[in-house]
Amino acid sequence: MRNHFLDWILIIAAALIVFSLALTPATAQGQPAGATKQGPRILLPKAGPPPPRLPDGRVDLGNGKGAWSPVVIKDLTGHGYGDTNIQNAGKRGPQLVEKPVDIQMLPWAQKFFDVADGNLSKDDPEGFCLPPGIPRMQATPFPFQIYQLPDRLIFVYEGGAHMWRIVYTDGRAHSKDATDYPTYLGEGIGHWDGDTMVVDNVGFNDKTWLDAAGHPHTEKLHVVERYTRTSVNNLHYEATIDDPGTYTKPWTTSWNIVWEPGITPLEYICQEGNRDIQHLVGK
Amino acid sequence: MKAKLVGLMAVLLLLAAAPVFAHHSFAAEYDSTKPVTLKGTVVKFDWVNPHSRLYMEVKDQATGKTVQWELETGNVTTLQRRGWRRDTLKPGDAIIVTGFRAKDGANLAAASTVSTADGKRLFAGSANDGGPNSQQ
Figure 1: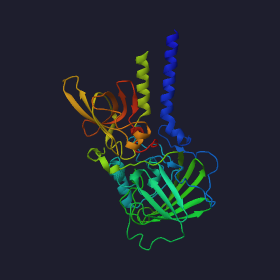
Figure 2: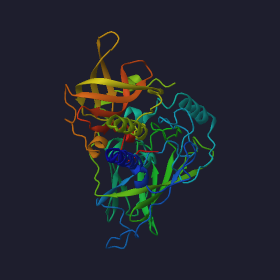
Figure 3: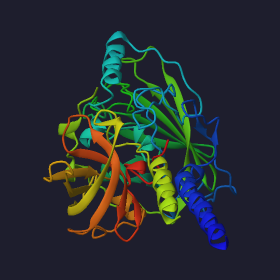
Figure 4: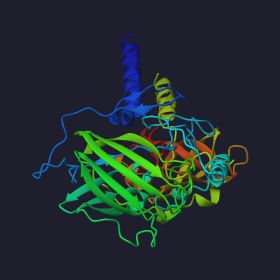
């Protein structure tokens, strides 16, 4: 009898351990709100003490004392497209943006999106190890750090793959030729709006998708990002997508990114062994 | 009772380790309606990005022939943060792998869990594929 009792204690303990392991990432990311199996889900801002400040009075965006740890967001509009995980394959799955936004695509873009959705995002450039672009770098699940120098921010990303980005904050304007030399991450110029770092980005190439769902963009893409460290543990991230070559009007999406003390980006070279390509068959 | 415990753990781990793919679309490559359990021995474990690859030999019970399977696991940084090492699995190790079969019919699957002969169970990393916090 006693042995059976101990066995059941063991079973219950094992179950608790396994479930806690399963739930750890979700709880580490803040408290999911309105979570249902297939329904919308957002991550509430993770609470904590007020954000630390640097000697110059600016909010400390991290500076290597840990890392921001974003989650994957498949559809930046929040409508659940492109969710190809095992539970939601082919369905409209949970999203982690704060509020779904209705957008209208130009006819070519709608057609592009429908094809991407129809073949389960098999042609997503990120699957080919190409960089995610902006704002998708912040919706790709690899830790990143932000270092603040007096005249610039340096973003160090583990993912996308193993990239960096320099955002000047010295008051300069965009380079006159920024759009002549389009790149994956574009050219970001930053300034403070109170405690919010605003980064204005142009000069993108059109080789990325905005998200795994397949929202496209052109080289006319202009992204305004707003980074607000609302607590020690939380970075509120907002991006406004303005691309008159793709969307009828600008649209804004936002989500929260959790702080992980002690984490540092590791090396991730996606190109090393990407053997998936030959097996990506779509439907 | 031990069997019950092992069974329960296996089921719970399977539930816990449902893959969420970030680097590429899961559904474009794997079939969520075709779970597979493979029992065999390790041939090779490639510690590479964007997904580490496990190669194993599985004996077909019906024909007696040995078949090689390729298992996709998580990326190196995810596995590293979960305590895996590049020599966690060695050639010849007896393992049981659960996962989901590739759509194209190849002997390929996305691994969910890997169990070793000493009873150790490892998340394959694909639950958080692409990063340590890629859950949805």
